[in-house]
Length: 188
Image (cartoon, rainbow, N blue to C red; front, side, top):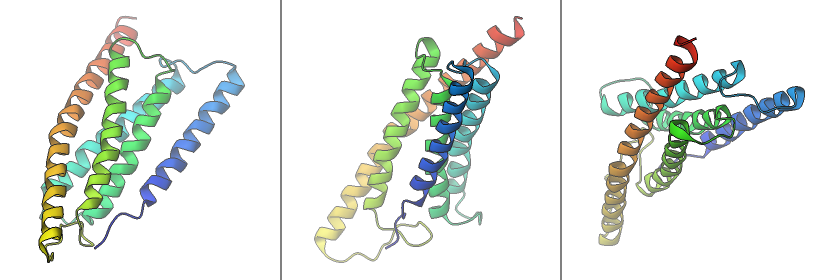
């Protein structure tokens, strides 16, 4: 039975620490919080959103195209977790700690989806997997079969919650980006 070693969590923590240190450096040098609409704020928002988009699309594509040979599913899941933590953290820094309007709702949805992702990661570890990330079918004993069935039901329930929240998040993010481009850029 192969499970994630947590390496992706340590790498994500390191990347978030590095981003936070750079952010703190800018705050120290400029003596102000970087504006979400400024160069640094936009850079954080764009990079964070791109990582979140990658999180959603590449892993989902790899998972659904079972004949694809683009690496092991376990590695793709680790990449999904890494980008799913770092991207939202960069978007949080982009917010300039202002959480009102559509941007605030988008930030709230982002926090919910990240917390949901941690719950999903925990549930995912309850289901034994092979080195390729496929569910193991070699269970014996009624209690093990029942535990596996319960874990699968939890994972299915989690998907019915996590995926629609993700869709709402990306819809709100797209509206936020369109509004920012329209009002801050195109109307100037």
